[in-house]
Image 1: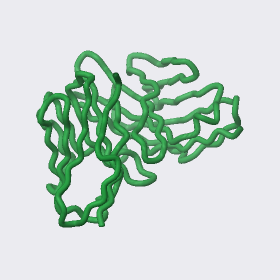
Image 2 (image 1 turned 135 degrees about the horizontal axis):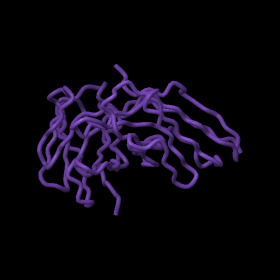
Image 3 (image 1 turned 60 degrees about the vertical axis):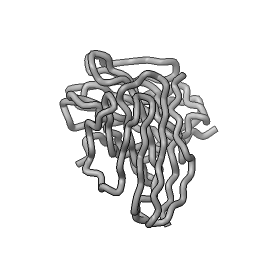
Image 4 (image 1 turned 45 degrees about the vertical axis):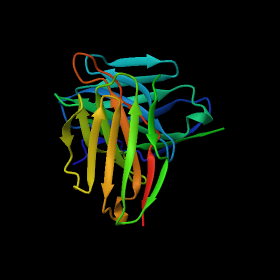
Amino acid sequence: DQQVKQNSPSLSVQEGRISILNCDYTNSMFDYFLWYKKYPAEGPTFLISISSIKDKNEDGRFTVFLNKSAKHLSLHIVPSQPGDSAVYFCAARGGATNKLIFGTGTLLAVQP
Amino acid sequence: DTEVTQTPKHLVMGMTNKKSLKCEQHMGHRAMYWYKQKAKKPPELMFVYSYEKLSINESVPSRFSPECPNSSLLNLHLHALQPEDSALYLCASSHYRGPRNTEAFFGQGTRLTVV
């Protein structure tokens, strides 16, 4: 049972344009959400996070939006750069545990 | 220092071998994790240690044996593995969940091949 889903396995965007990566979750106990960027054969690198008490968090070119009623979050990257090309995972944590559950990932390709 | 260090980077082992993966962090984090990642799949949680005690075991086979000798170190002992256990093994650490939400930092992983 996949509690965190990223329905787009891949996304291609032109350099300079906006990249929007989406993530849906099913567990209403999740109250903290994170986005990670990952290159092959490397560990995930933390990008940005958001607590469920907020609906937006911004850090430079990265903005995460949270819609709790829809159980949906998105990551906006603007402007997109070729170096942003990687697999992006959303992850969620909630309840009393330290479990961090990852989504299925979206491969972003930014074309020069 | 936001670094989680994993050794070795690559490991090839036979099905009868015993080996260990090592992970170290010096960020004062009291939660440490082992994840397994197969190609084109998300990282999958295996174990969580909280304050050096095993708090979550995601029904991992006993051929994987975790150990947390102290607050900075996490080991994963491997014995009698199968070829399907070949994967990227990731270690992570974070502050223990409490009033503060915090991200988990990951190591670069150990690429394990079982032959």
